[in-house]
Length: 187
Image (tube, rainbow, N blue to C red):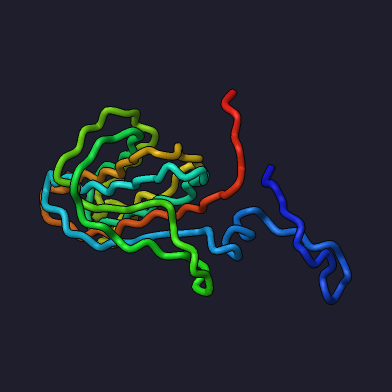
């Protein structure tokens, strides 16, 4: 069941009914929903890594979408927790509320120079050969992730491996929201 937050104005203007909205919608209005997208080219057997570095501030990052599209396949997509990385190119993170000046507490980098996957694989997806999907040459995609609350002060690696036998173009993106002022108890 999704938690609902009651609006400060308790009545809808036309029906005078009580207003409620989904939590994710409230976070959008509060300027706490973020995403990034990159375009990349991957040679055969190339591993493309995206680092999601979550700061130690007490915000809870809710990963709600991973979106990978590739012009061919097959390809594999992994999400690892507690990775160790150095270097990489910083990617711009966007607030989905374009009126908000809020910035994310997550840093995104692509192609780190050194990666140690010391943590757990927490998500896996497979992209089949695009030429076999519905008999067309349209891009294949590997999308989705179960809504996952990520740990503060932790690095995650989104790893895409192209096994198509040729160079492929990719579109990579992730969407998340940051919950502020909430305490979770392990249990």
